[in-house]
Image 1 (tube, rainbow, N blue to C red):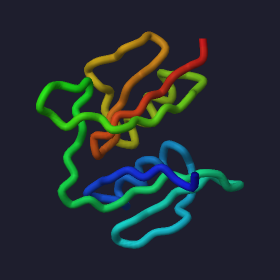
Image 2 (image 1 turned 135 degrees about the vertical axis):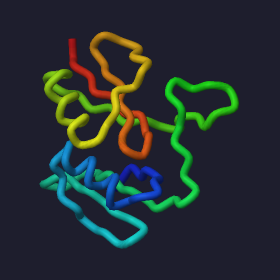
Image 3 (image 1 turned 45 degrees about the horizontal axis):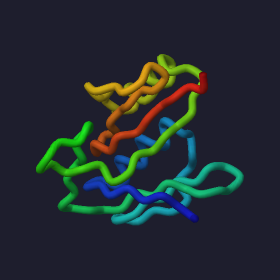
Image 4 (image 1 turned 60 degrees about the vertical axis):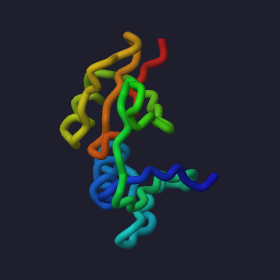
Length: 118
């Protein structure tokens, strides 16, 4: 696998959010596509222009756009990392399923999880 791709109406803006959080540099970019890759290689995270993008609803509800995937990030400190992603533009989701996990919505509305190993 070379990359996970997220649809968005703003590829550059969403890439900047994840770059601020992950620290990964931009590997490739054009007006419709941006890819971030970790230093030293590995699978990246890409952002594809989708002008008709509709953000998923978390948690899912009947007759609403369902989440197709989410990203999980293991962190050492939920509070500290939560402050970083919120400063970069994430929103803490209203519904939180577990004590050792925090669900956030990125600026395009994609759910992602921060979690700590217990």
